Length: 337
Ligand code: AHN
Ligand code: ZN
Image (spheres, rainbow, N blue to C red):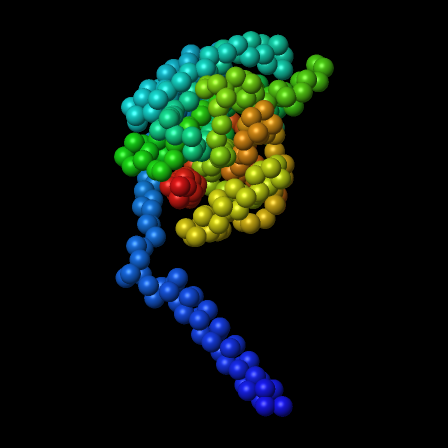
């Protein structure tokens, strides 16, 4: 009897003691102990300059259509490699003869700029730099064989990445970064083609790089592909191949965009599945890669009214879109440890 009486009141006491103890532990790990322990280092993310990115877009547009096997293409390739040199990257050039859907041999050039090349911790950022030989989505059928300027479709992604390169030179992030400008992305089978069907006619440059990377055994944690990232009224729905194969990174990028106040451009909603360079980065090198691509399921082609038309020119470029994408990319890469 006596034993029972002394035992029962101890139980609530014990619970109170445990709760008090755990509360104390919670407090000491939280804000209360900031003076005693070193604060978590906060990274300084550089400010993306959209005016600067816009100038790099304009500079590419000034060459004219950058269709493989043309003088404008060749000259623009020189310009891009020279800019990467100027911004302190280690530059690699991959020259390759690639066969197009109609058996034309394309004199292609992938241009790669590496930052902190010795680091094993790497993120890959990429875009295509060529422009399409055909305005085969133009409402005027007579223009279907006219090469396009590809300002949004081509120059915008590269323009954003050149501004990222300029920032990388000014302030290095904790990890290594590779910028890849893929060639011959947009020489895919045109709508008017009557010949036999050939698979994989888009993204020839990234297919080549996937088989023969610029560095043997190349690897990266993940990649981010920028495609059509400068248009007015852009919407970056979550491209579905990216969601399936790089879901964690999609979340990370869209969370970063929302944190920065660009939630309106980055709806956390599923887009379509697009055959783009990221597919080959993943399939051939097993590097998860997220395609940030203007795609709005509520619009006509999804890619914007100017897509693969003669209207893909400087008039449709919006610095606000370039800024939202560029700042989001910086936020993501400077927060990598
Ligand atoms: C196709 O139209 C098959 N893929 C879209 C990839 C692309 C073309 N991105 C820009 N131009
Ligand atoms: Zn295109």
